[in-house]
Length: 140
Image 1 (cartoon, rainbow, N blue to C red):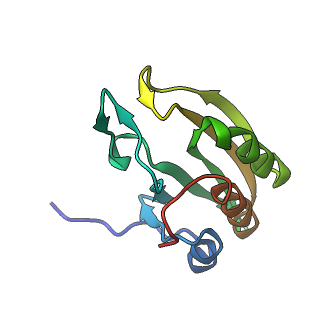
Image 2: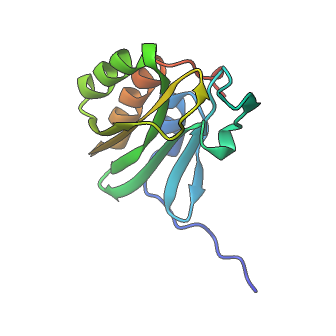
């Protein structure tokens, strides 16, 4: 079985990484980010790791000419929801859903899904503003 190279994205991924402050990875033609929160979310007293759904997911799909569709979800505490919504909408990024994934999480967390299609680096700057509205780990 041969491993195939990830398709060329046709995007300035270094500029996207710089704008977001995190390094993405080419996941089969989607430039993907998993941004960890700086705090812990627990259920039944057990820490839920980022890989189990408490990291912020950002996916960037090239749509041509330096543009990209972005989607994913932010994990936000109740106090972060309004500033996060303002940051996303203020940067031309649509909010497509606000809901919970858990019943007994501590602290209470909300999942904010988003969507936009525009210049990839411009959108990355908007996502950085949104990341600044929530408690994320230091830029990586």
